[in-house]
Amino acid sequence: MKAGKIILFVLAAFSLIFSFLFFLGSGGRTGSAGFIGFAIGLAVVGFVLIFFATRAGKTEGEQNVTVNIDLPGEVGMDTIKCRSCGGVLSSKDVKLVAGAPVVTCPYCGTTYQLTEEPKW
Image 1 (cartoon, rainbow, N blue to C red):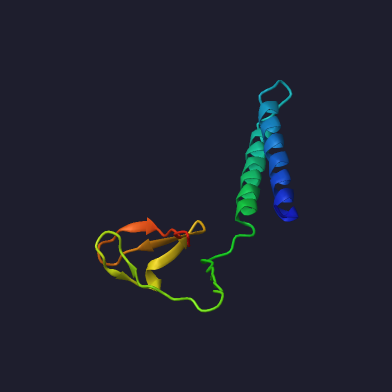
Image 2 (cartoon, rainbow, N blue to C red):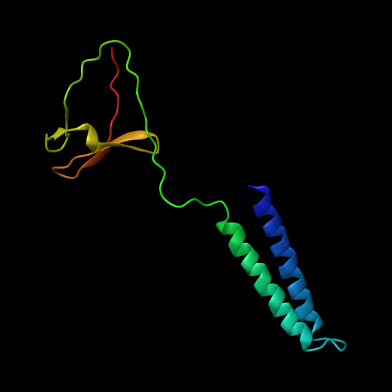
């Protein structure tokens, strides 16, 4: 968490605590109606600070992750076929989801995770 966000959250907490105290103080014998307005103003300031603290540091748009795989030596590529309908799949149909390669068949819509079979 960045220092600016922490400072905004701390200021918002103090603002909300003092707002609550001024609101409680307005109901006593020595309190006045002016304390209620001041308490509402401090509460508004506290919530505005929370709003800006949660919005700080967010970037707009999506992030693209590109994964490059270096294959050793000569590698023979076989065609990948759908397990359900037997349709030929291309590299456009394979996506990384949570670090695992997942393929979606454009013909039947079946989605499954690709697994690597052992070499022996």
